[in-house]
Image (cartoon, rainbow, N blue to C red; front, side):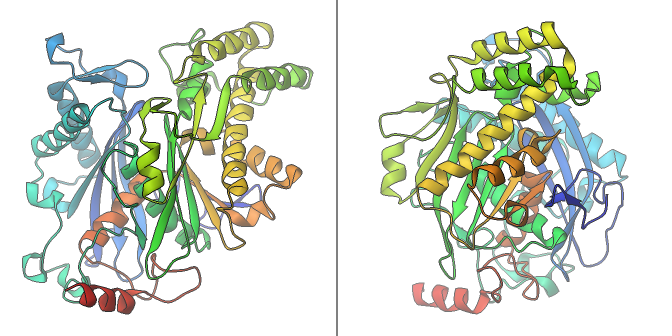
Length: 474
């Protein structure tokens, strides 16, 4: 797939892009993105050419989180994935270690070849203690894989930085002040608004970088929607020099697709099942069945601005009052109340499978997931958060696989929700991994002034404005 591949009139950065091309040069900044997710645990290796600012994915290992070792002592279980896989610090750290080892081995690399490691998780935590255990397990897995602690924290000065990177760093001019890709986190970030804020931050940064490969300038104002197993993402306004985070997303995404298979193939995610079944488009005589099943499914699915009365939304604990105080809105997708009607979707999926077969279930999933995405976009439009300048990036298996991209664009067009959606949407794989590479650059002031990611669309690099702002604070 070429860099400028056009998909359904929109820009799509697909899974074959530059994979297996080991492009490491003297100007490369190599980052390992390590993510423990509800469905998969990944180590994705990226190399950013610091002279151009473009990132290539040079290797990856993806393992199923459910294949984690069963805990020897259940008393050590600290949490579960959305699908119910039990986690302990030891078993999760071992899975992370093995995933990293395989990713490096397949590319004949060692931990010494990696400049920086960024850890993230999509596993939902019910308490702060659970989240802390996940973070500790991720860190322990990275240490077991051979990464030094220094590769997981930013350099404070040029003097501490490897000689190879010093010519490309601007740490002597600007320091990392928490903004990633030119977007400030909401006030109160990390204080319990919603536990997937870092995922949203990485997805937005990664989609901005992905836009560089497709010809799209996804700088501020912009929207990032990550349709992984759970929903994450954020909206940035057009403020300068830093954009403000004005909304976050949370709730269910790919877990909705997986629910349709619970009575058919409970051991598999929707993506795995469709791949293994080689599902093609459904026969024409099943269109009405799929349409009816999709409409029935949407009776149980709620895509809304989250009200202040909710303390839990889907798999996430939320603090809507804190979000409001921070000047941000929360949008989400739930099924029933906190997933109470996921079993209804399982029954619908089973019925479609028994009456019309695999292809119809695949079509049902594409129809429902595209509908959820379109309703999210319509929600934020109704709240006045979309401007004529705003571009939207979508990543995650439940937003970009199958026929979801075409359906999203078609529905947006036919309903008049978004003018010229083919020019305002980009779709990209591995948004979080690309975002990890961007975050690592931001933490070490490895910007590329001639091809900036921060700032407003079409505008210049904001480094000088950042310097002035930071000097005022000193």
